[in-house]
Image (cartoon, rainbow, N blue to C red):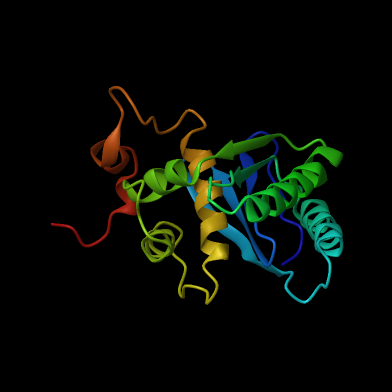
Length: 193
């Protein structure tokens, strides 16, 4: 897909990134007022590169290329979760840092979200499985088929989370929860009577 033409001040593009050292997911959504839609999503395959340094170089090049092609207004990343394997955490943190550096090199603002926050934002359950997140993304963004690698739908979930937390949908207070979402987005509800 080629560069998306944006109407000045009325539309914005969010790039979501699901960091990884073997597979990195990315997803771009277009926000038009209260509506949102998918521009593109996919994965960056990194397993074929022999060294961690070469993987980091490819992450920087590919993320910079995506930014240059689609000119997102912001980038949202899923923060690495804490695990027991320190080496894996370190490598994942480096991958995330390189993706952030790509955005910073193009002066794109960055926001991080915990995996729990992303899941809560799109499914209403902070402990949802990757499959549950993918199904909700399929519904919310009207995707015909869930991709084989769920890193791509995870990246779209991060982008949607960023949109929802950009002052539109609150997690606490008067406007919290699915009732508020349904009231604010009646066009997103189908077949419920």
